[in-house]
Length: 230
Image (cartoon, rainbow, N blue to C red):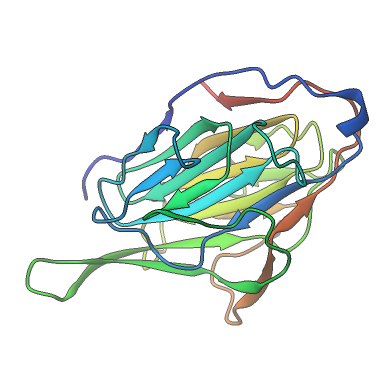
């Protein structure tokens, strides 16, 4: 398996307007895998976001309802890495605006299976992207496996757990995305998530429909940023 990395492209403070601080953020899931042939950019005239391999795409609207430039974030999950990039607009895919101002148009099926097709047309590998269907709060305790590190939760957030070797029953590379208004961060893992002493997501038999966008509320006034744990 090739090396997996978590990469934060831009670290940035996103200062909030006081009138917006009580509003939820919208986390949008694009329901189809992106390929290197797709052209994704931030707004109709913004920067291009490179797609180098099959990718699952999440767009976070930090100020839903605004129709002018405002702070957004792009999360791109692939076999090789997880990228979190700053945005100022809505996503434009192959010349067409997507996700912005969409309200519960569909449900994402979790886990989302991102299959990697080999040169001979067969599925070579896959990763599973799980979205926990409930908002986490600062009262929750989230750990990587039964005896591993705890992840600090400062504000209400959405958990996205990426299983990079879905067939493995032992320690293997995983990743945790914690998405809140305060910050968006990606963490390395080696196990399945343990929430309040109970294993979640890994090995669940029934798939879950996650309404897009998923709304994440806020408990306090904070600046927003992107963070990687060292």
